[in-house]
Every structure is written in structure tokens, then in C-alpha cells.
Length: 141
View 1 (spheres, rainbow, N blue to C red):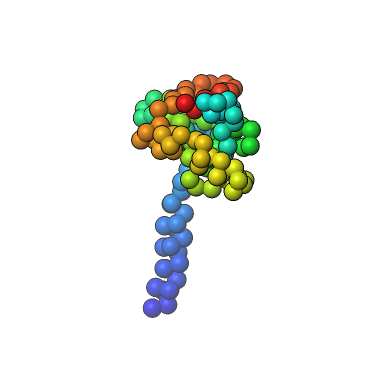
View 2 (cartoon, rainbow, N blue to C red):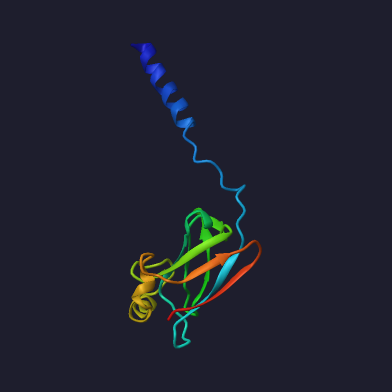
């Protein structure tokens, strides 16, 4: 019985040690930032922006937050600044409160960002991220 109490923690250590998510540091990502404006030229604000990879032509999904001026900076793979090269669908969602967004800005987004951009099933805006610096200027129609 004493041998069993010794073997169980040893077995757990070897099992947990084999569960690694791996590093993403070897995957190339490139800076992606920009600005989103509404059809009337006013900045879109109060929402998150998600770039959804388009199958084999896209990379890992990325996320950013629209500030009060409609500006954003994308991150992917949890903590990587930038995006992998590829083609992406743009989703701009004010429904869930994004980090750093005031209630007033979220309310503005809910009232002014067209609903078709809220979901990747209905969004019809696409971008391509290329190697190097990417500055995206997006207009919602």
C-alpha cells in the first residue's frame, strides 16, 4: 500500500508533464492596426473587432478593441501582437463588453454599428494581412 501512495504522485507528474500546449513563438505574425468608421464617417466605437481566418487561406483568429476614435490593434494566439498572413472576415461586435470600453461607448456601438457586422455568418467585410506592417482603414456600410 505504501508503494501505491508513492507511485500515484509520480504517475501524475509524468502525465501532467506530457500535456504541453506548445509554443507559438516560432509562428510569424505581423503588426495589424487601423481604424473603423461608420458610413457617415464617424468613428465606430464600443465594440470588439475579430478577424476570422478564412479556411486554409487564413491564419489564427485575432481580436482587438475599437477605442473612442475607432482605432484598434490586433492580437492573436492569446498574447501575440499582430496576425498571421492570410485572408480574414471582419466581425465587429458591440454585444459583449470589450476591455476598456465604457458603457456609453458600448451603447453607441449597439445603436450605430450595423447588425450584419456583429456575426461572422452575416458579415461581408474581408481583409488580407500581408507580411510587414498592416494599416487597415475600414468603412461599415
